[in-house]
Image (cartoon, rainbow, N blue to C red; front, side, top):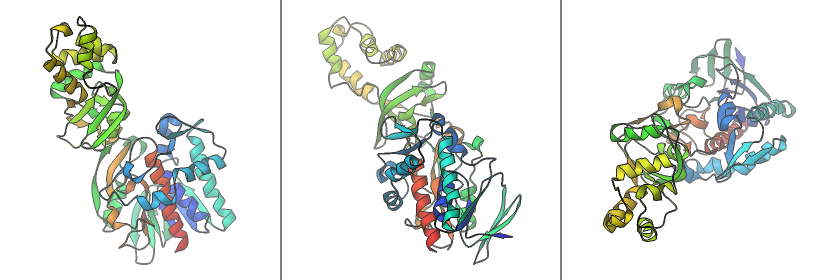
Amino acid sequence: MQTYDAIVLGGGAAGLMCAAVAGQRGRRVIVLERAAEVGKKILISGGGRCNFTNLNTAPDRYLSANPHFAKSALSRYTARDFLALVEAHGIAWHEKTLGQLFCDGSARQIVAMLLAECAKAAAAGGTVEVRSGEEIGKVSHDGSEYRVMTSSGAFAAPALVIATGGPSIPKMGASDFAYRLARHFGLKVVEPRPALVPLTLGGEDVLFRDLSGVSAEVVARCGKAAFREAALFTHRGLSGPAILQVSSYWHPGEAIGIDFLPNAAGGWLLEAKRANSRGTVRSVLADALPDRLAATLAERIALAGDLGNMPDKALHSAEARLADWRFHPNGSEGFAKAEVTVGGIVTAELSSKTMEARRVPGLYAIGEAVDVTGWLGGYNFQWAWASAVAAGTALAET
């Protein structure tokens, strides 16, 4: 039996960051990763360049049954804090859009940075041992220490950190292990569902699949949530940043609304009629949208002929429909294509300051395993860093 101060289950963003923080504060930590290498989700993120944080991070950009839970960790370790770490390691970066920060080079630089931070523990009298290819078996607690059996041996520590993420992208080795382990220790779990995921279309909407490959900047809405970004039609339905964003808020049976012309002022079709009475709805739409999309929308609106021959009331109705075109998704592409998971370990079970379970001393949960899910664009990485720092700091104080 090998003994440590803390065992971290999961060698992803949150797990490595937590281990580095605790190790640099003198703690002896072991990270156990099931996959053959650590940081696999980091490596594929941002097209291989890792969208490692977002400058616009704020608690209102996270979904949770308790919208206030994330405030503490996010305020104590900010996007600027992580950016300072990136710069300290000489990693070049750039801002794309909407506050999204990416590596100029490769996502491997972020993984290397995290491992380098873990290695720094030695200078502070701590240790961080990182083991990959470790299949986790039995996990138990005897009241004083946690014991973890793996394919290579047994490990014990007074503290255990659940950092194994959610079930999104199972081909990367993702699973519901975190939730099963949480339930084993008596913690409640908000039923997980796919988030930041493409939506599928059926019924009358299936005709839009013919537009596969066509994209346009739109405003997508679901309930009170609205996002202005690109939407992409696919052979199965809808994708693109705007759709991925609203998918986190969408529930089966609900409609989503699309404003295809977010720049258009009220009365734009009437203005077009006055400017060119011989124009058509399709020709006007084609000035602002891809031709195939303009043709499909005009056909569905069923206003053929010259604008000059159309009643103003009909044009008003067309404007209204184009500003809030209703799609009724029949599902999503599931965890296989979801970037993250909504749901997870109930936040009421955890301290927002330390991420420790209130009723199970020494048990911590961080990152995607917890019921905190960010918007698209680096927000989920920032939650991973912030929650990890909170737990890692607490581990060093016990």
